[in-house]
Image 1 (cartoon, rainbow, N blue to C red):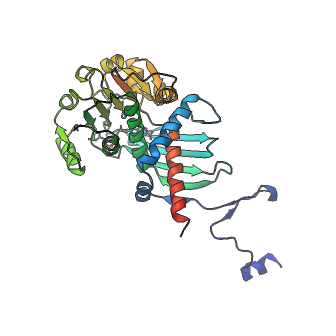
Image 2: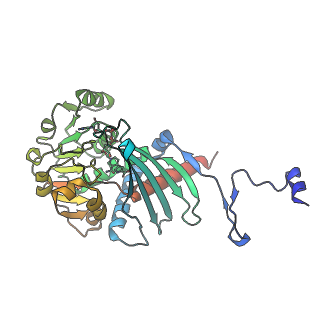
Image 3: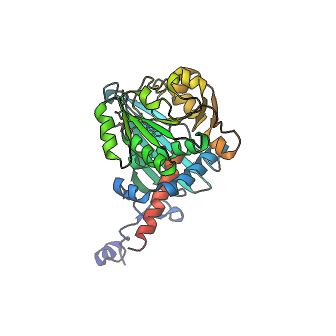
Length: 344
Ligand SMILES: NC(=O)C1=CN([C@@H]2O[C@H](COP(=O)(O)OP(=O)(O)OC[C@H]3O[C@@H](n4cnc5c(N)ncnc54)[C@H](O)[C@@H]3O)[C@@H](O)[C@H]2O)C=CC1
Ligand SMILES: O=C([O-])C1=[NH+]CCC1
């Protein structure tokens, strides 16, 4: 039958969900269009209980530097000068796990005048063999949860087990995700928060279910704290070593540019400094680069048992965010989505 006749008869129509990639017949593959999984659904599908062990495993794999396990370059960043922002490209390939993924994240400098949110992210999960996009996901829910979960892993490894007081500096999205996972995993007797505006701290206090002390100064929030999370949009130091209790653990999450700071030189030099990626920290962390502090280890080295966890000393975990964290999170979301939709 001629093609036109077949079309008219509806006999050679493609299934609506498939696409025939062009090329010689032996290389043609059928691909489904990507599914779109947006914020509310990502939140429903992603749970810390499943996420935490996957992240811990990914951090360990990354630090082994075995290219069959993880290929992850340092984030490529371009400046969006007009909008006081940056676009970060975060690809990763985990060959043994069959995960190919990239995140696109824009982030903005509020102190330079941006009124935009701190981050705006999208995650693309690809078929690791054919290269087609399997899923397009809201990246903000993933970024908030995976970043907080990695900070919680740093606390599990580096914080003193008898820790009683948690201080959170900043009261935005990351503050909330950090509050959620830290209070889910650990039993703090007191949680304190500080924001650069009094309303910010009050709003945060009213938005969570547990008791929170809203503090009017950073010093009030961190004096005597056993764990301190910095999740601000500061570009100058806000946490000073003179206020930090010896032996405290600091998870430093903001200040992700080489000239941005959250922590002062005293703290950076007195603490044992852990990072997610050495290369990332040397390229992107103003706290590391400008203080000249030595990076002692990656979190993955501690997980792999190749570097010790100095729980008795003051420790800083400088987080910049890694593509493998997004990749294993996106895989988890997609697998959950598939099992939820396989019955419908
Ligand atoms: N390490 C990582 O993997 C990631 C880091 N980040 C960074 O974490 C930080 C927080 O992100 P979000 O919670 O999403 O932002 P957000 O905008 O939701 O909250 C930021 C908080 O910082 C406070 N803040 C703003 N300007 C300040 C200033 N000049 N001094 C003190 N506090 C100030 C705000 O009041 C707010 O409480 C940002 O710096 C962001 O770039 C975000 C995603 C991943
Ligand atoms: O890992 C991440 O997504 C980011 N780190 C800094 C801003 C966004």
